[in-house]
Length: 165
Picture 1 (cartoon, rainbow, N blue to C red):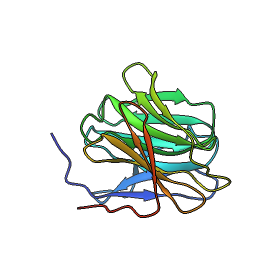
Picture 2: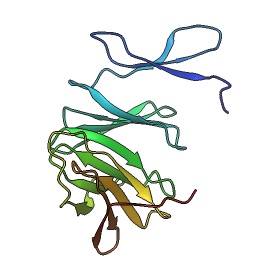
Picture 3: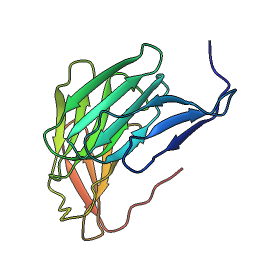
Picture 4: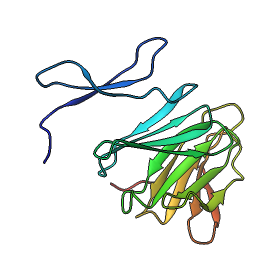
């Protein structure tokens, strides 16, 4: 059974983000209060979940149907989390402030692959899946785009990158 509700993300000073629906009431559907520092990204994959990353070093997955919370501690402030589009319940791409990008196995919390080598300095590191999830793409603090091969961690640095949509 689905809900015909438009979700809205609201953040109030001193409180966690709330997801509200435009239905009969304006009460929050769920309030995300577990993060002890700023939430840096929020993802809504096609899995009835809300996945957040936080500067407290945690990734949190809120299962809306089951009412459960799964937490993974990365150990460094997490700047971005991107679930796999092909298998969002199985893997996710995680960027952290130590400059590393990791692919996490969501079923057991293990790290499948780690990518590093691009210099991020003090900028926020963000990564995306590319080319049917065969590449991980990110930028560096010098304006270069880096493409990491997911299978062999091979790397290529480009001054110009063409993305075909």
